[in-house]
Amino acid sequence: MYTQSFNVPDSPGGKPVPLAPSLEDPVLQAAFDARIDADGRIEPQDWMPEAYRKTLIRQISQHAHSEIVGMLPEGNWISRAPSLKRKAILIAKVQDEGGHGLYLYSAAETLGTSRDQMLEGLHSGRAKYSSIFNYPTLTWADVGVIGWLVDGAAIMNQIPLCRCSYGPYARAMVRVCKEESFHQRQGYEALLEMMTGTEEQKAMVQDAVNRWWWKCLAMFGPPDADSPNSAQGMRWGIKRVSNDELRQKFVDATVPQAKVLGVTLPDRDLKWNEERQHHDYGAIDWDEFWATVNGNGPCNKERLATRVKAHNEGQWVRDAALAHARKQQERKMKEAA
Amino acid sequence: MRAAIDYLLHLADNALVLGQRNAEWCGHGPILEEDIALSNVSLDLIGQARLLYQLVARLKGGNTSEDKLAYFRDAHQFRNYTLLELPHHGPLSGYAHSSMDYGTTIVRNFLYSALMALLWEALEKSADAELAAIAAKSLKEVRYHLRHSRDWLVRLGDGTDESHARAQAAVDHLFPYTAEFWADSPAEEAAIKAGVGVDLQTLKADWNAIVDAAFAEATLQRPTVAGYVPEGKLGRHSEHLGFLLAEMQSLARAHPNGNW
Image 1 (cartoon, chains in turn blue, orange):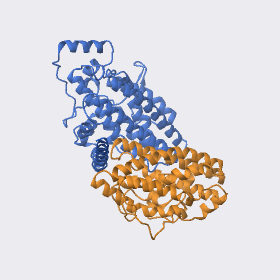
Image 2 (cartoon, helix red, strand yellow):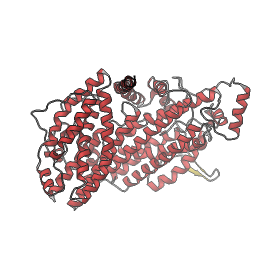
Image 3 (cartoon, helix red, strand yellow):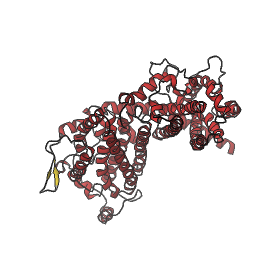
Image 4 (cartoon, chains in turn blue, orange):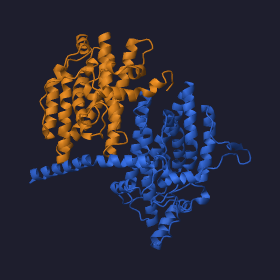
């Protein structure tokens, strides 16, 4: 579904720190820089600076983990979906997120890491994933609002990644973005339908919007002034548009959609600024955001423990598949001998 | 007409209840690829259930709808095989809890898909053209489900000592529930007479052959079955269906006039 629009260090520490300057072969480095300057693509077999490789592994694996952890908040409503049509749509959507995780793990593997290594990072708590999934889904309306707002914010972030300098990531993002945009429309359509229903349903939608709005604004990452890695990411063609620009674009796009839907956005400072030709909006609670990024949100422990449980309890199944494959191989070799 | 409705509901309830069960793995699979595969199987089953319920709703007329049939009938009105409503673990009382066991999931999907691969093929010739069309679509899907579950049955049975023991335990637990496949029911008899349904006795030898070949490859023992014959298709279920439906139907019933 989504990765934070900045690269959170995978240490338990927290806030981003500037990357060390590169000490690479100057000739190779010059060729790499020239390719980036010409807006060319870097492919797995190409030389690349170590810091570029590491940054990408971290960003793509965080993105993959986000897709997988992101299956849980919405998966929470599959068994209780209120109609068979909505149940089928939700299963298909959560399954798409699993598919995104699969391509992204594969894209990261082209940089010389393995899925096992990446999963180990997630399960040990070292690797980060998008913080938005550390909030609970309390009602069915959350499913629609996640589609509309969370996927909507994700698309804003991810469309520029289709032009990312690293080829496998950029190509994976083309497909991911198509599916996300479908999810966003499905989410919005589900909410439109609920708003034609009972008063309880309308209240459910408004309550979900109230709970998710500020979390979605924070998803774009800290203000540009506090994003030390953004400049390097821009230089490398990994990041194309700044956090604040993306956030502004999201607010401007969402305000009229909220009006059509018939809900209010929970921000008294939200208003059109004629001079800027943009909406102004209130202050984001960054302390709450960083507390959640650093493991102290409402669902961090539950999400991680659920992933670890699935992995540990699936060990015997994976072992069986390997053991059977080995037996088959041995039988073939015996027959050939 | 009544006979066709009860028969269609039996087929629809089978698909919905197993679809609901398999979807429980979404986000919790033993490996990402299996998470995706099980969700796909579940989507196919829910799709089959929807087509069948829509057909029933057209036959019944009035304000019946697929969702009324799925969400506003009680356990005793469901006509699915008991096998399909059991939780993904060994035998436990209705309100007991346990982690999900992939062996149980795979064995059940295999036993049911082996039956449905035969039944949907036979139902392509049903006198009811709409049911025949649903059967043709479902047959394509169930052939994948059978291949998927059979491949895993062999991997688990002929994998490690632990996986073999788990697969055998799942077979011992679930196999007796297949006795219900071959028991008579008024809905099936009436549907067979009308040319709408298929006599499962005519499929039994083929089902046995599919099962025995897979068990042999998986080095699993087929248990002998005696005694209790489940009666889910008559509306008499295990303790587990009530919990499954309570969860599935809760939101729809809390807002009976809602628009979704």
